[in-house]
Image (cartoon, rainbow, N blue to C red):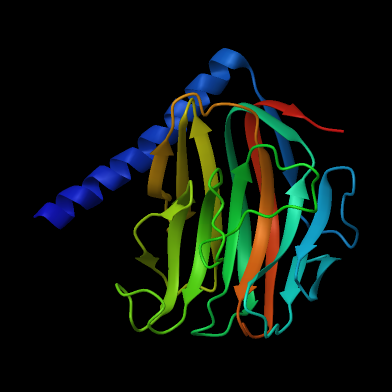
Length: 249
């Protein structure tokens, strides 16, 4: 009965948060930006690519933005990051669709959409997803990760999971077997919430509140690996963000 109550509360929360977000936007006014990524060139006015210890590519195609990472036998976190060059002001909601083209099991790899303050210079910083050794202490990220066996004591068999990461700590792990889906990160006042699309609605992965944490943010899409992660290939599409303010170049 307790599990059912928690699930009902989660669904209610998932429906309530978008209403709060849109209510706030309605009061403050709103700005929007969208990019389907269905183009053979990347919009350099809105996106900047960065790498950290990474071998791979970011390739615009008519089917979406293809990100690849190659095997790196290094004892540290490595990532490929696509930064939105717009500064985000106030409440916001941002989402991205994904398809897993080459996503090996038990590999410790991850994909996320997230924000962090003071991320400049863009391209030289990362979000530091949950599989990295240096977790970002000011990032809020919605993630899909593939755990290695025995990487997490709660899931010794490994597998694919959705989760939220806030201020260097991650939420509960939600198992998934989907090869495509959507991730979302949102903020209302000082509360950040991570979501995944369950096929019918946005399901919350957890939230994080911090007093006075309502300043400007920078957003990134990130693919990462850690310690001998194999070759990875994904496709991103249909990005959108609605915010109280967007300061773009």
